[in-house]
Image (cartoon, rainbow, N blue to C red; front, side):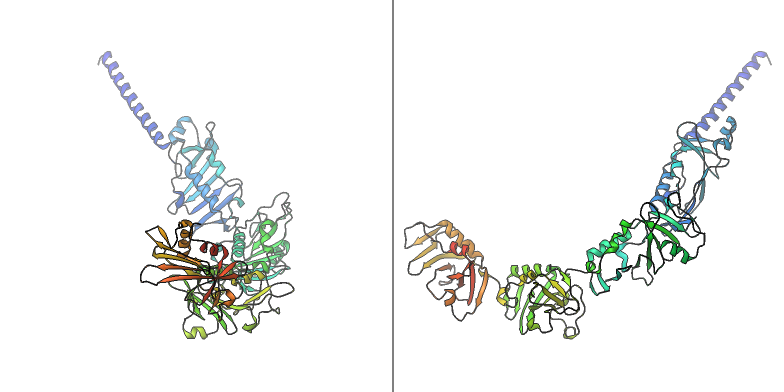
Length: 634
């Protein structure tokens, strides 16, 4: 082999070697390129069921059970789900900024210790239910705000964002659920308050309504109870003072709280913090979903901390914490404030029958299937819809000024001496149920539905009205203005009768006659759809007056009904001699409606009646003046 051939072969070998080296290098770089930029965490945050964080300052373990996070060590307690989600979300957001393989470390002459990973400063242990991962945290990278990490079962060192260090909790307290009362207000079925110097209160939810059962019985103010429950479930621990097995958990400079032994006697602990059952400033017992066993919150004495907090703990849970006193101001609520001031808990539109009684007198109204009110007793009439609805609106808004259990009032068993006895009923308690139901003892209905309400007359010298439901011992004091809902006499059927005197379609009116007895008679006849002619006169027709007559004739409503079947019309000035407005209708000859106007009705009206009807109405002065104006232009 010549020298020339040897040189050529050597050149070929070098070229091949260089190609292989370049290919290998390109492959390593492509692998590193694929690895960098990817998400660091191989798990799905939503699937994580266990988490342990081990740092120089904190060593904590958490587990997820039934979608709730709990601290397992160093103390067993509820964890703050929001904080755990923040940790897992932060881990999931980290990416691989640089990957250093073992080969690269060897080439650079570096070991794990150089990355701070021989003895990691911190460890994150994550369990996603299928696999356990241990993420070791080492030293910060010289440049780029990065930190070196490594999975325990993987050889590569990875550089990721220095934000990882900021994720580590600074204390166990930071991960604890600061909520003191668990559950939700809508699940509460019973609440009991024991307050030093203020007595005992028991609230019970029954059929969706809140009731006071101690120290008095009756409806509770639902809005106020809801507010109190919202405040109760909003309670948050200001600090965690002591936990069984974890002495001095949050004790620090300035707190004035010394650490207790790991296993103190319960009595000694409770006495120290003012949390003994017989010494506590307040005890709050809560039952959820009608459970037989509730839970109890004890409020103790003021802490020695400068923030003015008070000690508290859940009974049967070995943890003591502090609460801001402003979060407990609602405990000062009085029994009187808790009582429902609304006399009725009924919507006006839900009432289907109204019954009023005084001795032998009675008035009954019923709503028909179309929603219209009718008088059914003592006579059957169409009722004045607006008057009945106005009365219901007022009555269902009655509010008690205060209560007078056991007081001697004018609400007596003799209905003849009461102002009236009122019974409002909805469809479920409307008259006409089975006789057995009606004859049975009245069931307690805390809404007032179907329960007779005895209403007294106005008392003196301090004007008041007392009222009591038949099924309740509670006597409510109402303002005297409450009786204005009924007008002058709640047992007067005329007060509820329909006040419509006339309702004639304007298109059916063919003739208008206005008779001023002893003076003149004016007659108009229709001469087209909108034209009118005067008969027996050359005067022009007063078109505006005709339009007013047609308008009021379509729905003429009186101020009130004054009398039914009066013995004499003389007192009303309706015995003859008054102005008469007659409307002749289309169809058979002689069909007409005549309105007779009489004398003054009190100070606001004029007596009037429709011929052929034995009912005396009071029309407003203004309407009377418009209907009795001249039909002709002077």
